[in-house]
Amino acid sequence: MGRLLFAVCVVCAWDAAHLLGGGMLFPRDSPTREVKELNGLWSFRADFSPGRNAGFQQAWFSGPLRESGPVIDMPVPASYNDITQDARLRDFVGWVWYEKEVWIAVRWLRDGNTRIMLRVGSAHYYSVVWVNGEKVGQHEGGHLPFEADIGAVARKRNGTSCRITIAVNNTLDFHTLPPGRVEYLNHPKRYPSGYFVQSTHFDFFNYAGIHRSVLLYTTPKVYIDDITVVTNFSDSTGLLSYQVSVVGSTRPSVRVSLVDQDEKCVASSAGSSGLLKIVNINLWWPYLMHEKPGYLYTLEVQVTAEAGNSFLEDMYSLPVGVRTVQVTSTQFLINNKPFYFHGVNKHEDSDIRGKGLDWPLIVKDFNLLKWLGANSFRTSHYPYAEEVLQMCDRHGIVVIGESPGVGIKDVQSFENASLAHHLVVMEELVRRDKNHPSVVMWSVANEPAAEMPPAGPYIKTLVAHTKLLDWTRPVTFITNSNFAMDHGVPYVDVVCLNSYFSWYQDQGHLEVISLQLNEQFEDWHGKYQKPIIQSEYGADAVPGLHNDPPLMFTEEYQKAMLESYHSTFDQKRKKYLVGELVWNFADFMTGQSIMRVAGNKKGIFTRQRQPKAGAYVIRERYWRIANETGVMPEGL
Ligand code: BDP
Image (cartoon, rainbow, N blue to C red; front, top):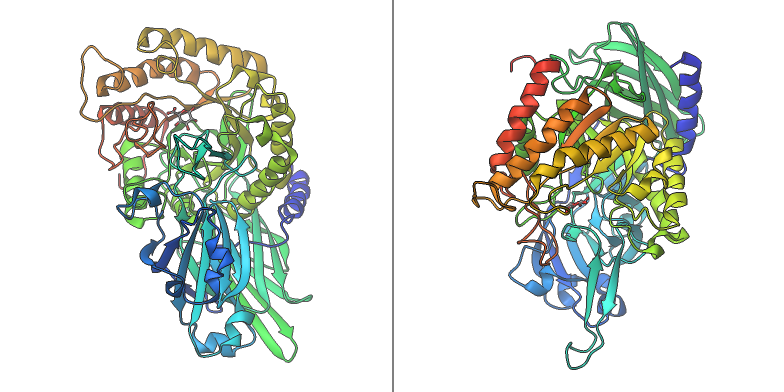
């Protein structure tokens, strides 16, 4: 890309990324900032009242929650669904209430130049937050962070503890993401009065609660609100364009320096935007593409400003990787070299915790990804925790970042209200994840009902808006429908296809896979001349269930199905296939139905992360691909 275009586009990206009017930097300690985790046990009460609104009518936020009625211990972060023995709580729909009493350090309260922020990593789905009974914020969306400045409220009660109340509602409707529907079953002889159920069109359990960390953190009154970096390179020189936005001062002085892993400053600059040149650049490379994958520099940003009679200073350190991403009609290029996604689709899902962030699970999953020889995953079907993306940056695991646009099947979910919210979610997603080198593509939705007339314009608008927000990454949506050929696909950069030959169609007929898969690939590439990723394929396997010759649901069937797909992948890999992501990394919980045996069993690992026969097939294949085309990391 020409240098001028690079500079001009950087400016467009910054303007667009500011539509939300504020940054969402991950809270980090620094000499000018402190972070305090509020994780652990919170008081909890579900509102089982028929209208689920007793909590609001009786203002449960106005005093200690235990005074409103019985409370139980609830761990944060975690989904609340699988914590107790109560099926009513597991399947609960409506408002639940969380509360924690916390101390705020006197030095935070006394220093009027300190902002005190309350940040929730994510809470599913709709949240309202109070501090000492005063409402400080609300947020729609279950997978992205939100925060509130609580300094003024906290300072009203200097010296006493602070009561934080968070009400969370998991009800999904036509205009939420993902969408859902509440159905009232009014048949007095068959259902109790007021009986309702929540129905959805997605295939995972609608876990709810506070899923990620709740933090208090401080910044000075003049603070670094957002940082955007865009990287490029030419020969051995790295180029890093940066833009720092500062709030609280009209004339801040900004200094940035880039520090390498030997703690050496390799470039520096002054001003709120600029271009850093790094000689002998260590590029950010994916795992199995370089001896030192995931090389990160630290961008140290320092802001000083006069505010009234004081002189304020803020510092923030952002990990950055220098890399480029490009797409041709047949290739996906990282740092100008062809990249082949050999990876998985995941879920945030595990026993007991549901979708709650859990470090042992995260680290185990990364160890399993490396054991498999996987170099990538897709955050099916919603944005994952930032902590996970930070691990991807450090380990060189490439990510397709997906929005929660899954199960958009009803015509009402294509209405303007849905689209408007979907666009905001894309803004929140890009704002949060734009600086992660591991994120190489955005997926705006999974399998929207492409055959419905409003689907085309809806997808077109989403893709166009996302490209406006971020011109540096390709944009796609995931499809399983031939109708998508005419509705939406013309606008994407990479065609991403989900197919389940011999599973949902031609059940039990493994012999049809190679023909049907071949037809799929040739049709799509023939029509659009765009690179293709097989973004899902797989079969359920109940662990320990065996039959030879293979029968559906046995480990042998899953293994044989994967192998049949692989032989066609090998032919198309030489042409335009740029990736294969197996469905799924691990078994995961779903709603109850006759289609699911205590959850979806398409994992190559069990839900407890033990390998099924299919895991060994994938492992052998991915290491073979890596050995043919890749570069082993040092020390492996
Ligand atoms: C795909 C969906 C995924 C499902 C999978 C399946 O994208 O969410 O879990 O099918 O049926 O179409 O296992």
